[in-house]
Image 1 (cartoon, rainbow, N blue to C red):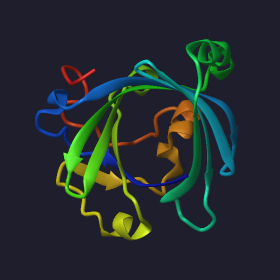
Image 2: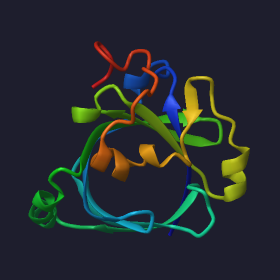
Image 3: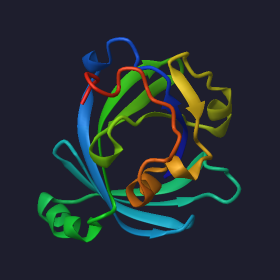
Length: 172
């Protein structure tokens, strides 16, 4: 399956964020081969997944091949220790936007205060045509520092702007 998405830093939290459906997500990386492939396990509420992602040639970060397989809790728990030092935790909110849904990720742990949004679309044309709402900030689709695998490996990028409401007193 091909995943096509654009990713943004969030300038300010959307109005009523906590009223939108959300799930706690933890994910850890089993293998990362530079820009070639990543293998991760993820717990999203009570769903457990093994995912392999790899970029499509020449796409500049917009599209990737993604294979996702549901695994059991026991399989997840057996693999989880192998991800030590390569993990991300976040709460993902599904916020409607024109043209689809923005998955707003409010990070916790070492990434506390970072907030990003991904908008997945069906085609490259739809990705190029998407007009972000005013609450979205800088686009980071092509900025490798904001890929979850790199956040898990390298931590929070330096000099990234603060998001209104995402620090003390913001959503957890």
